[in-house]
Image (cartoon, rainbow, N blue to C red; front, side):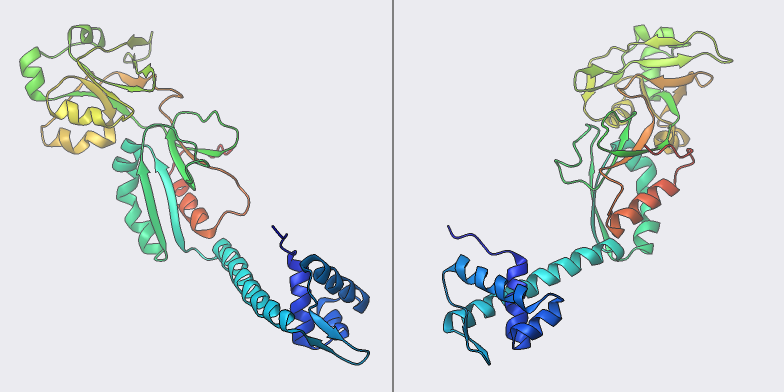
Length: 310
């Protein structure tokens, strides 16, 4: 297979044809006529064809040179257009932003805010995957990720967005059937709707009113939801047991009487990998397309957490 000449050689060919001489091409490219002559000779040697017929006074394209020039001009025009489009993407907020977002955070917190972003950025489209399993952003082609837990991958830039408040809930139907637990320790006698990410099964942590020794409960039940943290809400609504959820995700269900809050005086935490904090991730800081920068700035602007970019 014949090697393809480098772009510099092709640009030289085009400059000679369109300017009409080696000396004129040298002025366009800001090199010497000798350099132009050398590049053309090398190109002819690489391709094994004569491109120009030369005399002491003029040059002219051969038939092979004419065909090559027309193909090269189309190639270079397309290449220049591609480069300009790539540069435009850095400054023009347009195109698709692909994001991998933790489900419960995305649905209960982010989606209600996205109308403002889409209205302010009419040329940007969002392609979102709601997923609680941490994905490799680079390998899966994501521009941005929003994840629970402290990132342990140094390839990513990260910013803490939020630490959502958690609460314990159950449906009135379940409580009528099984009774209402008075303290976290009573959950040992109850069905719990649990979650697991990979091989890690989440435990629940309770801090008594006014502080004190933390109580760690490893809930048991017949219904565990793997790799999807927000599914426990559906299980609780269906009366399958007690569960821990984001307080913001169940506010409406509590107001409508579909769920009841248990242990309201306890601070509730989770042992999910990395903790319950929410982090915004993206693969690199430099040369971000404008569309990605706009989305990152918008999401970060929704956060009340102090900046801790790293």
